[in-house]
Length: 195
Image (cartoon, rainbow, N blue to C red; front, side, top):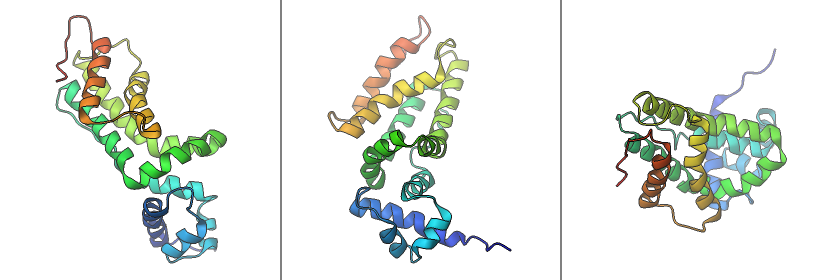
């Protein structure tokens, strides 16, 4: 008979990883540090996760930062809330230190990339897709547009700014981004006040 998995260890590991990412960063994170901080052993970690990178993805997916479901009936307000939440998630001390380094690992490991996309990005995208569909149903966005591409157009500039730090990301910048995008996404004759 197989031993039952102790969920307390899982929780302790997730907390330990988030703390350690803030303290030492992704590049200095080791199984030894995680095991010590979580009061467990490396073999216990290896039984649960195939690699340290998988543990990091679990810790990131566990954080619900960046998942919002606004529904104020105002596409500008709702999409602003999505952008603000995404920016806050990337400003999170643990996330901000891990995302740039993790992106390189994801490029080299398609299975890990798929897990990251499924566990971390999918909930955020699903929430944004709901917002886009509701705005489309209200006639605030053209129905002919690809909702997935809209999300990429919204998130892409923020990701670039957070990954490379070449330009600021503040609320005014996000509102300006929305103004640019909504001017092109709105049905003819519909204007969105993004001020």
